[in-house]
Length: 446
Ligand code: UGA
Image (tube, helix red, strand yellow):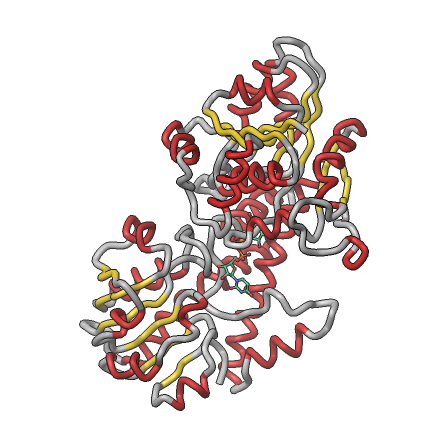
């Protein structure tokens, strides 16, 4: 099928590359000329494992092209995905001006039936506005349908999530458009694409849920808000564990074994960050409020999340007593492992608060240092964890990168000033760390 993706960001580029990989003819459009030139030259605008290879392979095959021309993109495709950014405004509301702009341009260039699919995370009822915008600018009076097809991919695991999703959601008011979307996703639904490493007979097809447009839009915000709620809930329980002497890792295990709850997203720590949960929780709260429902639970979810960052700082103060002039070595800066994304990363708030207390900060992250340099001043960025440990008074683990799990702790201890580890992600084995002679502080655990 001929497909165009507007917006060559994380979601757009992954969607384009994956749809090309499963046999479609894809164009990615972006109005950022430099970005398009870079992608064309094999340089990805974001760090995502496997993406450069997938984009390169499909561009070479001719299954994936990139352009700055909306006209070319709109002429090319039957299905046009809108995957542009929806950054938050100061009140938490999503800024939909890019979506509107794209809808207008699509309408101006359409010369035949098109399915316009919302991929960006948008407030419920955005589909109605997109539909209206296209209708008002529909020069050639062609038929079209607007559908909502939210993306559930995680940064760092985006290609896997696209190829092996838990579900595909399509919100559509038209059977014709829903059928086209079903056909587009057929290889993924039927586990029938080159290199697919699961068997249809063993795992069954991917569930495709067809709903009305508004329900599909709501599913995305509700899913992310629910996951964020799960994280804040377990962080709150971690605090109760700490006050009572229980251990959150055991409590989470015990809770998660109930299959109605499930064991994922019960990992307590410094809280969630990234471009999705903080933004989507705030946006969903605002949308609900505008519609007349005061979703106070979500306000508490955000508050607990922010408090976790403050808790990390207070734990450092408790351990070091005086923070001024002390050196804190920070391991991990990105909001989670396997990404260079620093948006809403807990490490930023924690580092700034420690600097405000007069601490010196040394830091290392396997991918995010260039991004972090833009956000943080006065930090000594190091080439690896051992350089960070050198003369540090505390080593603070802020992101659970795999390489930090296998550090030579004897070497780390040797380099440090005081042997203190604050594990803000509960990623280390406290007994193993203590056995090396460290003082270990976790988040709600023994
Ligand atoms: C999230 C969702 O997981 C995706 O399904 C969704 O498509 C995406 O948002 C989006 O809306 O685009 P992402 O933000 O990439 O994906 O990252 P997650 O892996 O979900 O992690 C989010 C944050 O929660 C991270 O800061 C992580 O450290 C934290 N987290 C996660 C916890 O603190 N505890 C947990 O148990 C799990």
